[in-house]
Length: 379
Image 1 (spheres, rainbow, N blue to C red):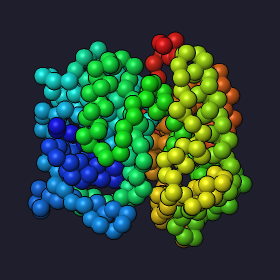
Image 2: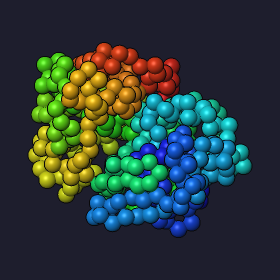
Image 3: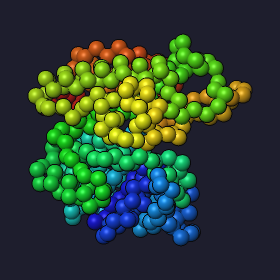
Image 4: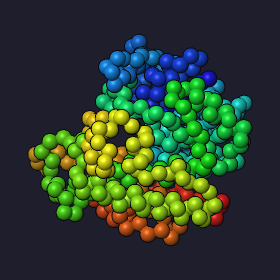
């Protein structure tokens, strides 16, 4: 099986190394980073991943390059790991390079931010493209040195994937077999893609913490940080409490969607339950959201996006971070739009979203553009 990974960031790099540990897997990496390509072509081309126990896994991707026509030749599966805001252009760019002689499984890890609708728009009416997504990353990854190595964090005990509603039962069985060939953890296929779209994750988690750090009345409102911070081990209590409020609103969206569409979305669990089931013994204290976030070893060492303060000493939040362009402009924006379509009040989500829009200064592209005009009537 040939797998084409789109993106050589943390998730793309780690998956490329892990896939090369599996027999019979050809790995092609499509990237826009010329330096990563040069490093692969001029050296040994071996990529590494450091496991949590300190051991190193090594693997050489079979192709790393900028050319989609070469990266996608004879591919069976495409995995998009690039951030949500880069996906619309990426899908449009490589659509014409997909093989025509076979069915290609085009998915995203993670599959949030309306990837199914984005892909359906990019591949309209195509019976050769099967659209899917994974609910979350199989492992956390951090400390990337592009084209060389990355550190692997906590692993999920179970993986969940879903297909777009247009796909067939046969495609469902084939996807499960393909993913089982790639990952050691058991793979469960969900019944509806909304189970991925509404799964609580970064689209709620990062905006809540940002608001509690630098929003109205926060400790660092209009004030630089004097040291680096970690997203979760340094998460303030106010951030955890705001996150719980946002999570309750997400559950309200879920219940409204179930009633409107007549589907079962019970797999969309409250965030604290979701994290306990995902990370288990890696969490030292799961009694509250606050204690869980600060004691989850799988999250340890993941730094908040800070950059040197251009106006003086200290550090400030990086406005170029994916926390804004992916989690807010795509993930949180989509939740706001879904709630509006379903007539669900979301004061906490909307408060953090509107604040972030104002703080950042606006985004050129946002997720609601991918939501079909007739949703939820399309069901």
